[in-house]
Length: 100
Image (cartoon, rainbow, N blue to C red):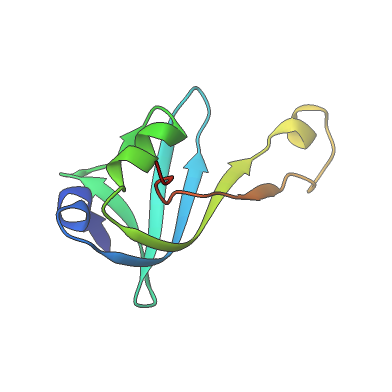
């Protein structure tokens, strides 16, 4: 299953959970849960990609987000030869627009 970014941001969608996956080199992808259904967010036939978290926040300004996390998959352990240690770092993230 996949969600289209244009459809999700065209109205005030309520999102249960958003995962922002850091893919390195300034590329971020989105996975969301809406009404318990998880899916990747697409633009057309490609995953929606963003250059920074600020761009994501601006794109999702019309959405209500209960919880968001930034996910970063580290390859450090793999690079130094430690077997099976590579993990995913999860950081809480506020994607709701700041009040002026």
